[in-house]
Image 1 (tube, helix red, strand yellow):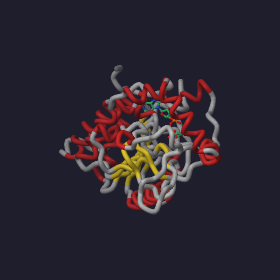
Image 2 (cartoon, protein in one colour):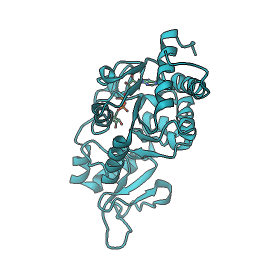
Image 3 (spheres, helix red, strand yellow):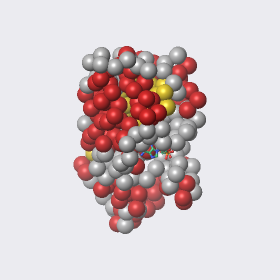
Length: 272
Ligand code: APR
């Protein structure tokens, strides 16, 4: 890994100064955080959709129109998982995930809103977290919102679509992953809005910030004068709103951020 250049180190130091002063920092994470775990991003350089084109945006409409057929296709695909699915299922948390969990542990990050469905933040030790696009390893009832770990939910291929076992429900059960066009569970939206209202510092990491409502939370925070830190090798629509821009990968920037934050907390440096 090439050493970070002086201007990036200075940006990291300024980000550390903001975190050191803040009482409630909220983070919005995107697919860029998992790139160093071998999971391709969707957009940007080499992204899955940059290369293969965008997927259909009416996935949920297709599911709702014929959930049985959707499930039959899912079970067929499970026999020969896609390259993306295999990348997710073999991925391990990277230095960025571990450093972000450490920032929570030392009280520098209060809540993480992640758009990633790969479970790597939790496996790295993050606990205060909203998975706004769901989690690939869980199932969810579309009626009552009840969730189960995938490993604990038995699917009978003769009884598709699977139904919710909750008394009085019987709703259709699908993967917890939120599809394009699918309503995001209200409790997830409420938690994101509540944490954003409490934020006195906001940091985006590895997101192109083009998908809503996720991309709206950092914007809402900046409208209240909350300082925004952006960690991303590439520019995004939020770059003009950021007071600090760290043009680096999350796996490089976040461990360096912890070092500088410790220095600020020990008072052994003044913010440039
Ligand atoms: N470290 C940090 N950021 C990185 C890295 C890295 N090593 N590599 C790439 N990036 C940045 C890219 O520059 C890009 O801005 O990560 C971002 C990835 O953007 P997207 O692929 O659009 O991912 P994301 O922002 O999470 O997409 C949001 O769109 O398709 C939906 O549901 C999907 O949750 C996803 C949502």
